[in-house]
Length: 223
Image (tube, rainbow, N blue to C red; front, side, top):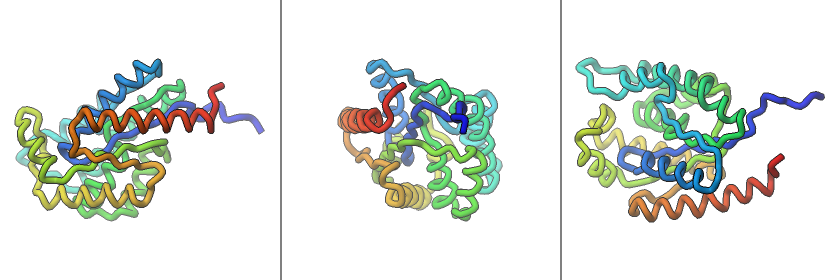
């Protein structure tokens, strides 16, 4: 049997968390740290990552007088994800890069599934279709009490988006969703206490990633 030359050889790491969890800052710092270690890194985000996907991001997050139906929200996110996976993530993985993505499929399950109440089984199937069954090798979940997270976000008025203005009840459902997903996949989803200082969380992430990469190198030696 001929070897699959199209099989991705890179590493796909996603960062997840509710509003105000600090994951975007941690994604940037993780990329800077990995680059300093001599790694080839691509830093990207969802929704977004391509010109079309970034336009969809604006539709999803900008304030609008027209309410967005949960199903419409899910379809827009999935459309952006397909563009992102095909044009950015998979090509980078094919080149052997470490792809660090701020949000991915778990956010759809947490926000549109647990938060909006859309059917989880349907969303899971749609995600598989949108990603071509691409699953992160590792997901870092930054967990913070909703009250703390929203206080952080609402103190940053200039960068607030449509989701920041959702009810506390909605964000509590999202947090439950993320924690439930992590409980179901403890080997892939690693939970970090995001109520700590940014520096403390960064140190915890770096320590974990160091161990995780060393283990991967033992299991999958570089060619």
